[in-house]
Length: 290
Ligand SMILES: C[C@](O)(CO)[C@H](O)COP(=O)(O)OP(=O)(O)OC[C@H]1O[C@@H](n2ccc(N)nc2=O)[C@H](O)[C@@H]1O
Ligand SMILES: Nc1ncnc2c1ncn2[C@@H]1O[C@H](COP(=O)(O)OP(=O)(O)OP(=O)(O)O)[C@@H](O)[C@H]1O
Picture 1 (tube, rainbow, N blue to C red):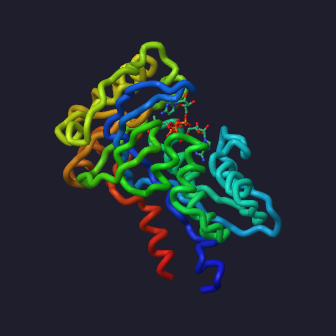
Picture 2 (picture 1 turned 180 degrees about the horizontal axis):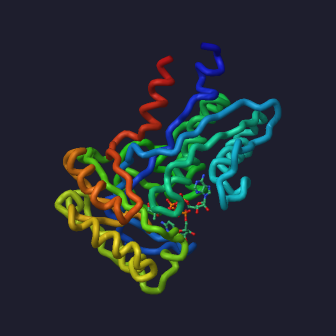
Picture 3 (picture 1 turned 60 degrees about the horizontal axis):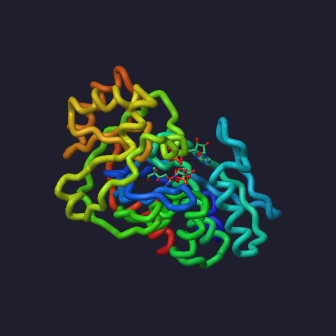
């Protein structure tokens, strides 16, 4: 193996999805962003990113995503942000294998950005700390910090104040209804609950799983309402983030596959495993021991 591949150039790095196990909106900041209480857990379902050296300081995508201009892509924005912040003059070509549905509430774009921050920090030899990368990530989107943090977390603030939490690692069945939910549109709704009472981690563990975006999302997107109804035949069905994906947790892979198979006649479904440590973090630990 040569030095380039030892470092991780050309290797495939995961950008896993997240689910929100509950989401409460407890206030709103002067800039319009909402103050949340949420619980993040990762799932193994991932996009995969590879990085290739280039001879100049350009940042480019091997193949831009359909419907996303190259310079708007969160991967490109993350790489350019790192260059700006550190003065790094190295460039990169990024290849993205996109598996996570866009506008699904699974945080795919945010996770792609976090993978770029963490992996290029290593490949470009920048030595930024996790805290510095989380702060940079926050400027790209409220969901980016948790993917840099790398552990299941109780999230507060706009989602950036994170406390590690150990959750049961169950199996998850996800339905992706045939619609893209625009996060900004949901957070702008006049009908959104913005004054939920704060709860504690113990309240969540005792069973408070509500998502304050649920009603507004279901009113705007009847498919999401129908997906929740169909999934709740098998287990408690919940919305992740602002949707559109809905999910249910199962104690075993067999139970999850059973529900998934029945639902897949009418819906686009996924089965995956919930994990407390981000698959990216697990991968980076292996890399660090080379
Ligand atoms: C719904 C969640 O996915 C839950 O994890 C996140 O809160 C959303 O995170 P995100 O998609 O990374 O959000 P951003 O890209 O930062 O913001 C998208 C839009 O959502 C709104 N937004 C987002 C997060 C937040 N705490 N309050 C907000 O009001 C803002 O209007 C913003 O214009
Ligand atoms: N690499 C990327 N992957 C996915 N979407 C991206 C990416 N870069 C930019 N975007 C834009 O971000 C939007 C949200 O995509 P994402 O997959 O993160 O959905 P989401 O999980 O619902 O997140 P959000 O809550 O931000 O809407 C997309 O519709 C797309 O326009």
